[in-house]
Length: 373
Ligand code: SAH
Ligand code: SF4
Image (cartoon, rainbow, N blue to C red):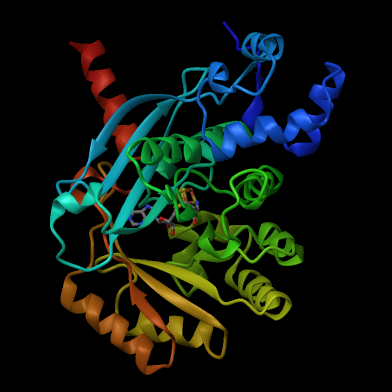
């Protein structure tokens, strides 16, 4: 059965106002409802105590508060990372990760539920599968099914915000990264509406500087973001500094080769005065030699940027393996020596397959095994 109710999380302020006006409700109800949804984090219309009973009943009948049902949750051994697979109203699934960071390294594991957590980052998805098809990425290997709606994107954040609030945390979420399943700039408009929902003080009200959006190299999206007056961070998945290799590793490169991508990135920096983060997943024997490091340094020379080296999370179906630690260090040192600011990404919960798309893959594999049995 298709879901007919309106997803309130898919409406921006203007659209919510339109809906309530069409119901002959006063405009101040918009603020009241948004406060319940995004500040009080209500998950039930019954809790919206300052709304008249009749309005609550109508809302419950004709609308809904998001569209995600949690199916499975995995936690890392230290309890700091949590990954949840959600089912949407059409049965498709998508995953979201919550990463908690402690104030001091080495704090006890129990700190996950205590005041020692200083940062809570949610990594959200924008698509079911991904059409880009990067061969080292579980999501890319699963094929593309569909884009998420605005409501489905916002609901991922609200789920974790509610959970952390229920656990008694004053500041439930501090950071957001759009680095889960899918290519966020394929549907720039939906991602932009999500960014508005995250930063709008009447809705989630997060600081734009605490939000990062990662693209595989959709040049139009980079250019559109550059025109917006919102200080979100841009990350670009580089993974290779020559077209032949990048065509293979990040296939959107065939459409937007490095010259075009780098021109868009340099224009972005010029327009926004913000640095771009380049993500580079080190793959054993593929893109991790001293010559590769030199090519990266040359490509990024003189640019306001930062390289984030990522230890590859080996996936079930691909032959790509992670670079051994000594070579990672060498790569990092070469970039630093060439004056490229470089960091090594801290791994969160590898044992629960923190790379996005992997939990979904495990679950569909299990379902297939059950069917075959
Ligand atoms: N589609 C967007 C955002 C989601 S992927 C993009 O590609 O940028 C977020 C990051 O995780 C990207 O840099 C991506 O290349 C990287 N990634 C994907 N699979 C990975 C894996 N198995 N190990 C390490 N990083 C991976
Ligand atoms: Fe899509 Fe990003 Fe995975 Fe590539 S790495 S397939 S762009 S989600």
